[in-house]
Image 1: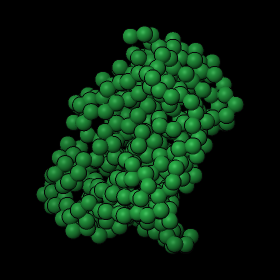
Image 2: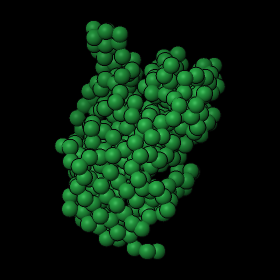
Image 3: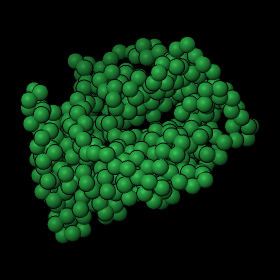
Length: 404
């Protein structure tokens, strides 16, 4: 294999690229095009550690000219990882990365030689085409199937097999014209600037949940669990948040997630700090969120990708105990999650990176968009209330897709 070379240079303006990987958060981020290298993932229980070792070796061998030396500059590996370890995935080292930092500095990184691909920047308007104006929405299984699945989960919880399981449902949106990835991503970015907006091929979303951020010897995760719909007024919103904070069911659901993340980070950190919970208001719901910070130990601390594997799947998207919850999900949901609720993000040659939980997302394939949303089922859960919660979680992506 021909050795790879990487060159990073300061740029006057960041450009939008079509067809690659896109990552945006609070005004910063990057877009990519082309492929310089590929790293397969899984299947198997150690897929993250194996992939992280391959990525570290690959990026470490690249002849890298990076005068900036910032998180995300230089060669990186990007992608979305399937939820289950029985599925195969892939990360790519992009041939071109065009990025912007939080303080407004822009850069371009080129990695060569690359697989044959167009590396020219393409604006979203150039690939926009005719926007869809007619839509049909189909809910897989429907409310009766959902209610039956939640009741079966509650039976397992009552029998002591589970403390919590996150069940998801799937919705398909059919349009009269193909969906445009750049257009949908741009709508998500503008509507949800505090979320991690991403596109990995046709898989797009705006996730509020940070699975793992690593910078040097520090690692952060911000798990979310416990949800209430937003109110129609400021006063109603305040009342609903107070009820969320006071709810034993919501507090218990949140506690299970935080304790799991704290324990798993403690296994690889010298110190772990917990701050929260605090309410995080989004467009359609408010979540309880807690920030868990760890100081990594060891001569060569694990990188962001390996750390994401240490945590995934948290009880926020899987359940507790983990193995029993994953079995229940496979038996009760009735569909393949694929990338939904799996990690999505990036890691650089220094091991720094960001990985979000792929939520508020959709898989776009021509005129069809497939959306998924879940709810945490614990003792005291009501099937009707959990259905309503999934509706609220589907709403942000529905708004980005459907314009009439």
